[in-house]
Length: 289
Image (cartoon, rainbow, N blue to C red):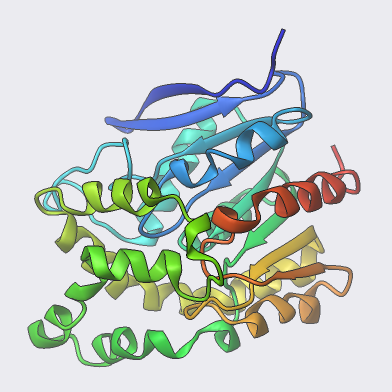
């Protein structure tokens, strides 16, 4: 029987329908994949079959993203603390006792909050352009940092380019040598969800709240130093948002961390999924069960 078929499921979590993809042997060690902005678990569509040959893979869509519910901002406060609380309820509902984390972009501050709250559950960490160090923040954060310092409507409106098709394509294509490798349905699907009524304001709320992730960097780093989790950083080295220095910085707190760079941009799986998948499978051999 094939075990790497991907099942598409929904789970009611705190009154929200959370969509997730699941594959692999039910008795195998678990890998929890957390996506980032502006995407969803769709970003793992090619990685999941690779990992599911040996692992039980679970990849949810965060609230406000993909096929999960996107409640109105009046009903759900879009902060990373709340995203993490929902994911905490998600892992509780699935009774996940031990799992390795794959974190990308927004998945990093969400997943690292889970690690702080559940250190006993985390067997290992794969960070794919998932930042936890200030030196990893690239120059493209400048207009967002301006908004953090001066929370005005004008500075908020200046960020609306991030939620346009042009902004989404930039995230996918910037730093990619051969853009023909990037499937157009990737950014087209993301943009479909970004174009939903109210989605722009949801995403601008999260951009505003990202400053609170940086305030937590010292706590994330203390977690790394204290627990010394097995960690693999797989990084597109031409990512304009999260620089290679952010990947190298993990070794400061986890000297045994593995850091691998790939000649590509932010969405490294679009161009290097086979190489990254092989690196993860090799890394997972060293991760406790």
